[in-house]
Length: 115
Image (cartoon, rainbow, N blue to C red; front, side):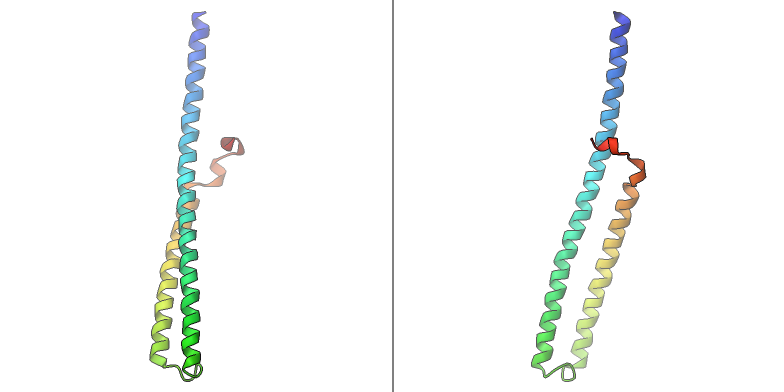
């Protein structure tokens, strides 16, 4: 009887350790997904702003009489600002994606871990 109780305790300890390990892995994956989702949402918001910026630029250009009549200095300044934003956001998203992939390499987990 004593041996059976000891064996059950050991099995329970193993199950508990496995659960703790998988829960920890799941928590890390969930946090990484949240971070990636937040980055994607931020990118979507930035993209909406960029599209509205371009639309307003087009309206201003049309009001000035077309692209030929729009002040070159102002157009260059707006283009420079947009390029700066694109570069910043592109680098930010790339780094987040790389971090996500490195932290949660799919080959480290098998399908049974997610049940």
